[in-house]
Length: 348
Ligand SMILES: [Zn+2]
Ligand SMILES: [Zn+2]
Image (tube, rainbow, N blue to C red; front, side, top):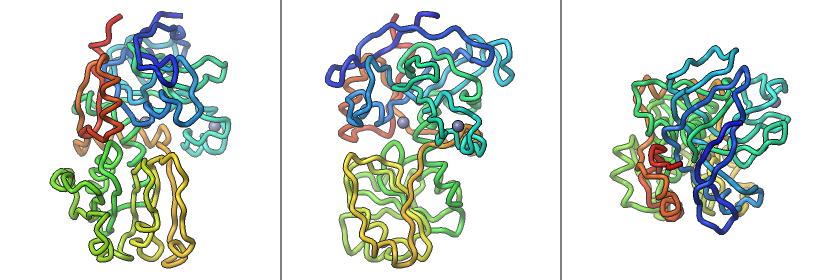
């Protein structure tokens, strides 16, 4: 075991504070990553505050991890010491089940091991990226290009793959009309990807102050979703809609915008279930779907695509001791568009 340190929530209602814990010695296939940057995902807040009712404490959140390899196990082939490396939302899966074999490790039938607030298969609790170091099997560690700003790469490991994967799965491409609902950490990356894939992209927002920004990020049109006349104009015209909103909202209003055989995919996680009218789906043979992160092969593909097309997250860098204040601002959607912790500011 080696000593690690970071910031943890000790209970659902206490602020994050300095915390020491142990990391395993690297096994033959493990990579030790000294963490340089970690993104702040909205789900870190949900879990630190036990809003999904499955939290285990103490909890070191963080699953958008970028750093440098400081040691490797004897059988590691993908990395050498000094390489840039990244870890996302999961750190293990069985790698034998039907879903793992299909490169969808996030849907592992044995249950994928989450980077934090999870348990390794031997029962050890997992601790995330708000810390100085992480030890992870190389299969779950990604390579990143030196061409991109490492701080701005960090959010790609959750927000990036969460939006890239469904856009790829449903084959978004040039000639299609695609909607993005919500312009936050997820939405702004969904917008960049959909634009980069060549689609005609419509950004839906309720705060028109974001319209200029949406256009800068790649939107061809911006629609105020509170304006019924504007919404009516787009009725039955979309091939695909990516819904990134985590607050309760009316899904039927967006389903009605899909054309024949169109799909709306949910990637945000509102606390309350949403009512769906059957007629919203019957008309035009529409589908309502969901998607969770992406597999390891697709995550690497996404990171390589981002390097090739110069896509990163828009970020605000914070120091580790600003984390509790940052959480308040994320809850108020007061961030453009992702906070990233500079781990140099973490003191032993
Ligand atoms: Zn996340
Ligand atoms: Zn599996």
